Length: 125
Image 1 (cartoon, rainbow, N blue to C red):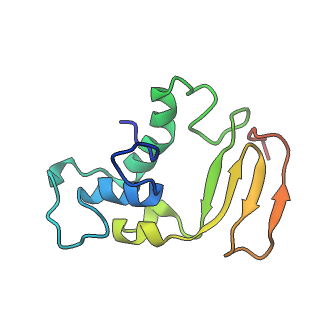
Image 2: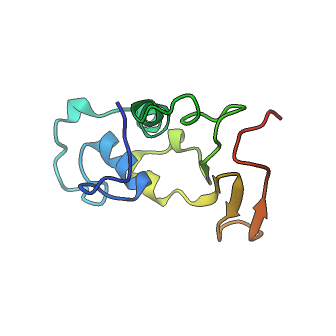
């Protein structure tokens, strides 16, 4: 199942969307009853839907969707492992850095401002 944050009918904030699909209700509306709660998905399923499954649905699974050598490395670095958080805690998980097209952007929670890395492909370490 592919998920995304660029559709006009849902929240544009991916962490909110990931929480919503796990809760089956808007994360910011805790008193709202879940819609078909039996269809809730796990954190791993949500993140796979936002990464590998979305890349597959876009016909780009040979270059996108996984962090491995040789693939485009656009990614987000969170303060806490999102797979370990409750859905309600997901939207508040601070973003420490993003990598887009190989450029590393450190966010205010980090200690320095901006650095660059090599081209936007994952490299073996």
